[in-house]
Each structure stands twice: as structure tokens, then as C-alpha cells.
Image (cartoon, rainbow, N blue to C red; front, side, top):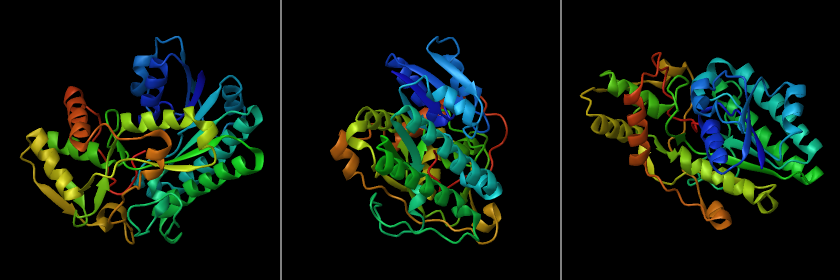
Amino acid sequence: MRYLITGGAGFIGSHLADRLLEQGNDVIALDNLSTGRLDNIRQLEANKRFDLAYGDVTNRQLVDECAKCVDRVFHLASPVGVRLIVEDPIRAIETNIYGTAEVFSACERYRLPVLLTSTSEVYGKSDRIPYSEDEDCVIGSPVHSRWAYACVKALDEFLAVGYWRQTGLAAITVRLFNTAGPRQTGHYGMVIPSLIDQALAGEALDVYGDGRQTRCFCHVQDAVSALIALMDRHEETAGEIFNVGTAEQITINDLAKKILEMTGSPAPVNHVPYEEAYGEGFEDMRHRVPRLDKIRERIGYEPQYDLTAILRDMIAEAKGHSRGSKPGAADQGSSGE
């Protein structure tokens, strides 16, 4: 097979490219490198079955040129991290809406199966834990930019289902829950790499609010396995939405303690008010847990990595090389995709 991965130089996209190439496929990675990094795909430069198309998913001609020479499409391109969304909501909205529209239009034109990566953010402020794919979403007011990402990703999902129902396009939607692993950086506020960087630097670990909010962290390798399996069964999974993650919960306080233990760092934990990190009126969810019954039934999905394995892999990578600039505010509520 020949695959197009939009956002292919990003954290998850680069791991997906690695796996598809290992399986003997050809891969085109379309990326504007705004949040993706060349370092993520450096190991693929010499691979004759890999190509990088530099550009934006809102570029209709470029998307069309990439789509017409592939068999399947993974659409991952999207701004990442609550920090980025709060600071630049226009970019988040326009890239998602216009970019997804161009990708889906090209896929319909060439009849290509397409998998859209969405986010657990779409569940919003719902307190019906664990989250099921067919439950209502409860998204906050437009007054708070924090909800812009949830809204546009929900619109992306409506577009995927709409294309399937109206045109028969094999479009699959995945809601990722706090994906983490090697190559993820704290530059856009992801909590685990941010806390690891602070621990290894001997700096206080910034935990927002009271730290009792819980999250479930999924290893990027488990997420990649799920994406490929769902795509491989696109004739059965098209038109549907699937949670991908793990149900293993941990508070951010306990996450910080675990990172301190595994790094051997004596650094203290510093609780930072949300208002100080994100501005007045920021809203967060206390808990975010996926129900995984649907994906288990459909593809036999079971996460193979626990949180200890995630932290071990990320700490080893962080110790092996410098991440560059100091991380920004840690996103202790986003999905990490």
C-alpha cells in the first residue's frame, strides 16, 4: 500500500510512518513543520519508500497531488496543545476546518479510505465517566478560547460522518486520549515531557490547580497499532467513531511524584493556579477516561504499555539528548495528540 499521512512529521504521525514503512508500505508525509519536526523523521531520510511533502493541508493543489498517488490517507494534521489553542485560536479553527475539508474532498474525489484523528477534547465538560462514543458532548462557551479546539474537532467528526453517509466515503474517526511517548515535546504544553524536563533540570515541577485531576495516558505505539488496525478494517469501521487510549487513571499529583521517583530528582512540586498559566476564566475537566468496549469488540484492542513503560521510554530519550528551549506551560487537560 501507499499511504498519505497529513501531519506526518509530528509526534504521532512520525511513529505511524515508521510502522507503515516497517510493514513494507510506501509513505508520503505532508507537513508544514509548524509543530512537526524534521528530527522526528530524520531516520527516514534515506528510505526510498518515504517522501516528505512540505506544505499545508489547506493547500488544495498540494493535497490533491499527494492524494492522487496513494491508496489510503491518515489525517493527523492539526494544531496541538491547549496552550497553542488558547494563544492562537484563529489558526486552530482555520487549519482544522479548511484543512480537513480539503483532505476529505480529495479522498472523495479519488475514493480513498481516510482515518481522521480527533480528540477526547470533544467530550468537553461532560461528567459521564467513562466517556462513550455515542454520548452527548458538553462544550463550554465561545467566550473561552479553550473550547475552540473541541468545537472544530467535533465539526471535523461531523464532516467525516457526513461524507460517509452522503457519498459512501470510507471515513473513520478516532478520538485519542492523552497519547504520550518518545518524540513528544513540552514545547506546546504536553504534561509528561514538560514534567520530565523540569525533573531532569532540577526545577520545580509545575502542576496546575490542586493536581487532583486525573488523566489516562496511552503509549504512542498502542495508538499507532489501533490506527492501523482500524484502517485495515475500513470496510467494517467506516462511518464510526472510536475511542483510543487506556483506562488506567492517575492524578497529576501522582504523575509528578512518579516522575520524580523514576528520574531520581529531588525537585519540589509547585502548584500553579490555572489563571496564572492560561489566563482568567480557564476551564478544565477533573477526569477524562475512555470507554474502550467498542474498539475491543471491533479489533481486539488492548493496550500493551502501562504508564511506567511510557515514562521509562520518555525519560530515557530525554536523558539521551537535550530538548532545546525550556518547555511552555504544561497542558494537563489536552489529549496530547
